[in-house]
Amino acid sequence: MALISGSEGIALQHEVMDRTHAEFIEHLNALAERLEAGGDGLRGLDELIAHTEAHFGLEDAQMAALGYAPENCHTRQHAMVLELMREVRKHVTEKLDTDPLHRLMPALAEWFPQHVDAMDAPLAAALRSRTGGAACA
Ligand SMILES: [Fe+2]
Ligand SMILES: [Fe+2]
Image 1 (cartoon, rainbow, N blue to C red):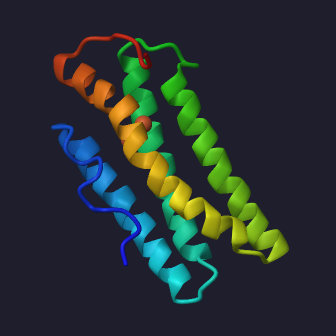
Image 2 (cartoon, rainbow, N blue to C red; image 1 turned 90 degrees about the vertical axis):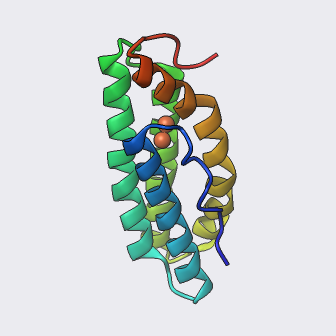
């Protein structure tokens, strides 16, 4: 069963962002399926992390181009989520324990639509209008 609906976060009317978000959901659901099938999920987690690095990196660059402060809360949230993914990966490889990964998955599924609504949607609007503005309320 899919962890998160494919329609979450893909209606921002920004082609690249919508496609990237659809891919993020695909990676998340693929990883959930691998875990459900009894795997350690490491390959899927690596793919998710690589995709997320590119995803967040692009949005961070877009915010920089729009004049957002480097340490704005959207960029900081990206860094925190990536750090969490990397910490979980480290735990899986070093302790051979997938429990934190099993806990990370529903947390990411819950976090992602909120992030899209609160942070990516205003960024998409700013990109469409080519205006700056605040990254976060
Ligand atoms: Fe995003
Ligand atoms: Fe974002």
